[in-house]
Image (cartoon, rainbow, N blue to C red):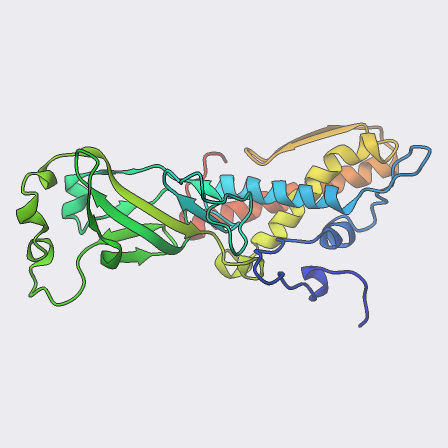
Length: 290
């Protein structure tokens, strides 16, 4: 079927080479989640909502879901104390050095003895680029990148020697003999860990969290409908929504147009609530609200 519309709804969107892509396109939002809504203002010029405005709604919806389920959906590169010569970008694309800054990780002897366990602050993990061990004075003493045992989905790593060490583990590396007391006390900023997180590109969103793309679309539509009444359509006076609690609040006249928007907002909110409840149960995600 020939169509001039581009998006996942139309099964014809592919992320551009070297870029993460779009969770949904403006066409997805306009012609699927906002189907039937005339996105045209009541001003003299009959101004039509621009694609950029809808793309902003989608972007904000992704951010909201990332915060809610405590995962990175957009692909990100985390660097610790990045040099000024490195290139930072708001969104990942090939050639960018980093998107976000990461803090150091403290050395905890209990976790070190538990196979060098570290819970990283962001997940899911795509790759680990840097793993370095520093002493109490801040001197780099060892590159442990080859020790990394990575658990991608929960964002966890274990640091334990690989190779033929005769079962000696850490002791066989000579690290303990060189710094015999360092591993018996807690101290700050012991590890420099730099890594890439998120979903490798927008095609694979539902592979990680089935159904999340649909939820992004619904929430983006709610964001748009929150201002569509005052700015675009007569009769719908106001609306507000918050993913943090998924509360809804809107007032309007009792016209057919107003009731239609109110029903759609309520339907989307109810479906998002049900999705969150099921996701929390299935993935044991700690969500801070009911």
